Image (cartoon, rainbow, N blue to C red):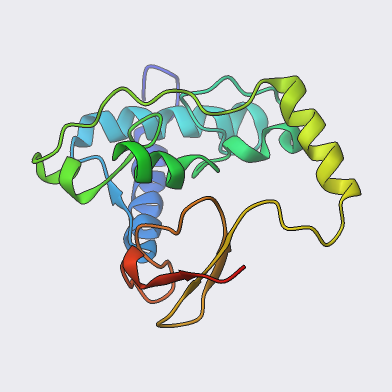
Length: 168
């Protein structure tokens, strides 16, 4: 049993699921297994508490719709990886951070305040057809994603970030 009351086997199974999903998506988990285990235990606690895998490094509201942006892997993972080499909780890291050749700085919180998130949800529901951020296309497989920057690695074909072009 973990300190949070989650069976060790549950944490181990969830760790393997997260590791496999990261590997399949071209992402790298933090190389410290004890650190990863503690974060995964936090995810398990949040799954038990709220019914969804809220990021363990942020305070969830208990309202899934309000917390969609912080369900692990959260919406901020890729921008954090691009800008800092690690996500906010450091579950996901860049190759340089994993290899120890780059030290990840303290990652600032980029999640907007509750009122700003609510306002953004309301405005995005009323603005049909407008693109609020760039759309990137993988030149290898055609994968499309809408975000400020392309992913470090294409989740479909594993092509590197430099293989993406701005589509819209």
